[in-house]
Structures are given as C-alpha cells and as structure tokens.
Image 1 (cartoon, rainbow, N blue to C red):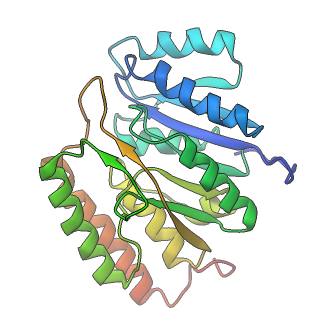
Image 2 (spheres, helix red, strand yellow):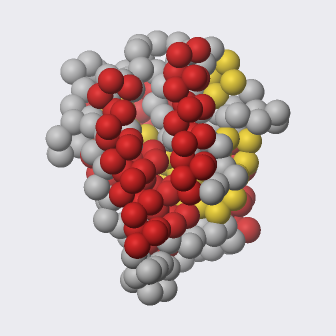
Length: 254
C-alpha cells in the first residue's frame, strides 16, 4: 500500500472482490461513484477478479476506460474471498479502505458514514445490519439463523457488544490494516479475522447501522458447509492470541 498524506481530503480506497459478478458490477459501481462524487470524496475503486469465468474482467475494463478511478486487479493467488481481498489490499493507496461486496447488497450511502468516522479518528468502522436503525431486505431465513448463532458465539467468547462481526462490509484505516498483518484467512473467514484482529490488538473502533439488500442477479458464493470449520479455526486462533500472547502483538508493541 502506498501512502497518501492529504488528510483534509483523505483518499478512500474501495476494495471489491468479484467472482462472476459481471451482471451486478455496473450497478454496484454506479451507486458507489454517485454517492462519493456527491460528497466530493477523493476515491479509487479496486475490483479484484477472482478467477471469473464470465465477463467480469471485460466489464471492469470497459468501465475503467471511461473512469480511470476504477481499476481491475487479477487475483493471482488461489480462488477464494480471503485471497481476493488480500490481493486488493496490496494495491490500495487510501488512508481509509472500505471493503464492499460486488452484488449491490451493501448500501453505498453507508460508505459515507464509514469515511466520516475514520476522519473523526476511529481506526476501524464496523457496520451492523441487526439494529433498529438498519434496514435488511430479502435476507435468507436459514442464513439469518446461522448468522445470529455464530455472532452470539463470538460475542460471548470475546465479551463484545458488537453483534455483526461476520459482516464483510467494513472500513479500516491504513494503520489498522498494517497492524492486523499477517492475514492468513483464505476464504470468507477473513470477514471475521480482520475485525477481531484489530479489536484484540487495541485499535479504536466504532459501530454504525448499515442497510443490506439481497442480490438481484447471480448466486451467493458463501457456503456454510465449506466455511464452518474455517470460521471456528480463525475465531479460536484470535481467542488464543488475546488470551495467551501477553499483548506481544498489541498496537505499539509489535
């Protein structure tokens, strides 16, 4: 990650992992660029193509020709959400980095909330879809049940007031991203590793309500049958760091 020192208009990097999302990306990018332009926020959008077999790469190249702020990056690592996001972080230049899903499920206006909180001095901003101020549409019932059970387990284990740790849509400062290294999650368990690592390591964080809308095109890549043990591994790995490391990796000491 390269540096940007313009704090008054800090560059925002939007990192979007994408696997076979050609049908969703034009609307997703249009929504994001629209709200960021309205707020006059300097930004770059990095779309990482995760070994897609559709026209994801062609779609992004076509958009990038018209808007140089949109960049295509190929995931040169093995397929997987974690590998793809980690690849995107290698190219992010912003003082703030927000991870957004390619399927238009995240509300672009919530990115503004995140960005403003980073400018206030928070190093991590987490969204919660499960509060009165949030709006959630078409969330699958079985996935909702698994989500609530999993997040409750994390809350109890780490004594956290935050109830949506598994939410992929989060924002981090450059300092927090550097401090959470190394990232070892290869798949969707990265959505848990990143926030828990920053919390365990003492970075300043806050929570804001965020909206979520079900995807219109394509199918979700998330599969609990493949992810259950991977989530548990990462959760226990970070619980052990918190419990046994004697703060060797705490901010300012690592």
